[in-house]
Image 1 (cartoon, one colour):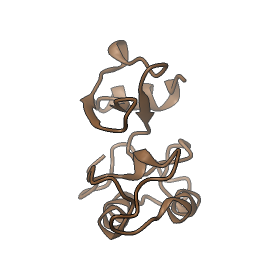
Image 2: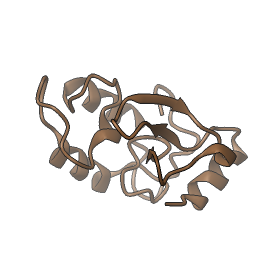
Image 3: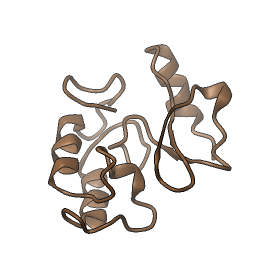
Length: 119
């Protein structure tokens, strides 16, 4: 899956895109656009909290986080691995705090990410 809109905007700010995970959901580091192969990796949006990949982090993205929320030790539901911002195999309060740091608001670009956001 290509993410050309976000990739092109990220390039403007010198940011790597997308953050890719291994097929097993383990952190695989950041791959720059030329090296990214989303056919064999799970490619997460940049920043991670822009779940619907519309360029902002807003209420719609928060709705996705609510669906994925499992709590500490609760595992990760299918399709939710990109919201595991701390890589501890659950979507919990720590991930919610990371998400909140990335909120930009509806139609307010999230690239570059807000201060305090760890994309």
